[in-house]
Image 1 (cartoon, chains in turn cyan, orange):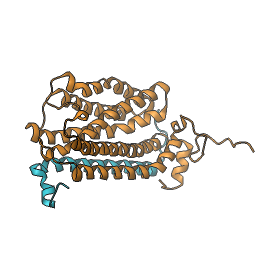
Image 2: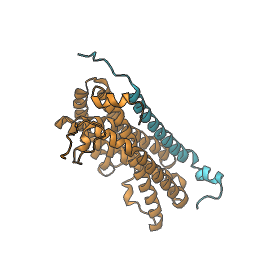
Image 3: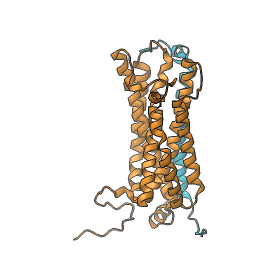
Image 4: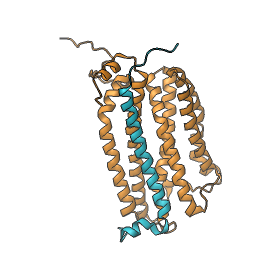
Length: 55
Length: 262
């Protein structure tokens, strides 16, 4: 194990901002994309059938 | 009694499996619906395992300190950005040449995920570049060609969304995707072809054997996690696109009438 305390873990040897800035944005965007894709599917399932109004 | 002739579009029919079974949007829709929860679970397990190896087991790098740990997501994101583009170009071309709707829908479902991984590769690269090179960004060959990849994804999305008629959108998108595929070998070989600030290929990392092993494992586990994640999210989006584009077909009508079951 590399870390003796939570503080040390979060500090990342002085690179905490860069390391956690990478991981948190990565996690946040992946969770967001998962949620958006599930929402798009749910909306498509609920969408009323469109009238043929084109061409 | 002979086999009943089921209509090919029935979503819950169980036909004999053929290589093109899932080319039928209805069958893809049903199969993916069953698989997606398991795919999510697998992505999560692989991701947690990768993070554990990457932070609890992999030691500190003697040159870069802890900053190097960004590699565990930077390289997988960059790999996925290129892989997804190639898969997108393949399905787009397939859909275009054979007029296969499912292939074209699948290509469109891939694009946002590819764009996301490209953005993440650039973002994590910037946050790694600052402490190690002293710059967030430089216009060297590797970084510039990866940035062009992001523009290609965004261009593909904008183009296909701008055309209402699915077949014409698929044709235009396939053309853009194929022309843009030239960029993939340029990204991959840029660190060899040009003198770049970006380091060379990661897989030939020189380090003490034991270090390299845990680092490599963390990176490979997170690559697998990102790859499996891509299936989960792309299939979910592809199911949405199937419902959107096939809304006139009988099975989609029945599905919607049957209430909101996955």
